[in-house]
Length: 344
Ligand code: DAH
Image (cartoon, rainbow, N blue to C red; front, side, top):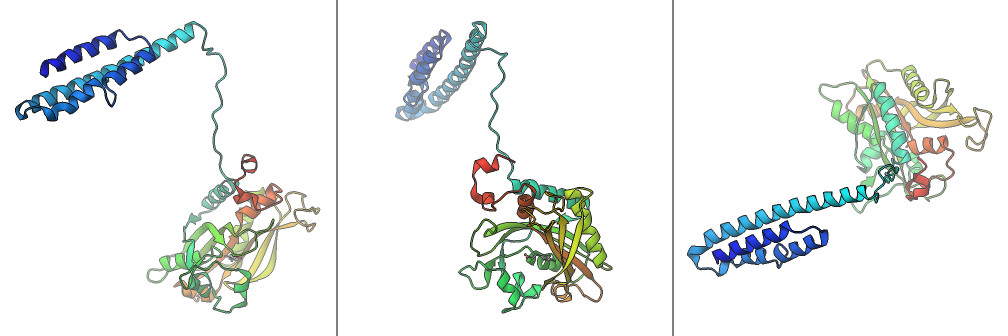
């Protein structure tokens, strides 16, 4: 047996040395190293030998297999190199031709906008805080000053799960409660964060409304935070986002979790305020809801409203992207149509 092994080794090595083509090499591999190759069968046959011969034979057979595999690799590379050299010499490969462009994926338009948000808010000292998509009713509504049957709940139709009180968040505001409960209470710390993420609403899907969309929530809590801080901060954001000449307007509004509340408009960047289809001929685009964090919400988050105050805001990056590029239909965002996505 042992001598048969050596004979086959010598024969295989000699054959390999004389091989010059890829086809011949493939055939050689199948013959010796393939699943039913001679060498592989030999390695396997170790079990049929008398016990005392097995160890030596097995060791040698494995060594020969490894040596042949290595030799095969080397041969294969040298044959490839020779073929390439021949092609180059014979002009079959024209190295002066331009390369073929590689197909590259791109970033989703919402990702572009979100990243711009992160950049600007980071420059302004806001850290990203991630909060969960699956919420409980309390955190999504009640602790934000919307107890059961509060009329404001009707504005945010909700996806319920089969587990009572477990819902998909209808906005990113519940993250305010989670963040405050992390940083508030004992050893209370000030907060300056944005909370980006997906929100979900059980609504009819139309050109203007989707059942899922991103929001970027903002929250600042400190000891002397005032409405003027909110206005200045949002104005600064808008300048960085829409340009230094961006004109702003604030409108009094109502949200259960802020008091006072306001909505923020920026002068329409498509028509420059003269009125167009996108701004519905008002000259203004709404970019955020905001306000001073309601004392009830501060307390629910573990902050004493007699000592602490804060502001919050919520923005919709899809809406902004839509306005910015005059995209007529919000359904494009999650439609996964490459003809749309490739434009960004
Ligand atoms: N959560 C609100 C919504 O989805 C948006 C919002 C408004 C967030 C005012 C805020 C805020 O933080 O202060 O409609």
